[in-house]
Image (cartoon, rainbow, N blue to C red):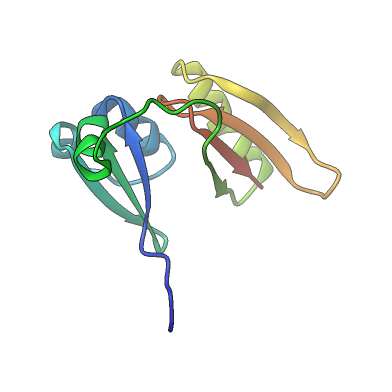
Amino acid sequence: MTVKLKRVAIFVEQMKRALDFYRMLGFEIPESANEEHHVEVEHNGIRLAFGTWESAQVILDGWEEPVGYRIELAFQFESREALDELYRQLTLHGYIGHRGPRDTPWGERYAIVKDPDGNLISLVA
């Protein structure tokens, strides 16, 4: 039996607010998607889906508001400078920086921001 990852889905409180954040990360998402309850986009071979909390209630037979950090998504940058610049832009737009850009002992440049729903989004170069 072969199992293949089909998509990563994120449940969001407000679709437009979430999509605007991921657009800043380079995802090409049409503005018409802002009003949808379910949106899927492909970016560099990865399929990312967004569903509203209301749609989660249908799929999951209910909804309990999550607590704590549930996932981490990591996005690779071509340079340390590109990572630093996007981190700066995201925080200027009001997104919460969780860890500012820093060099790690294992040789990566690393930063973490929170998406509008509190998910940790790692930026790595």
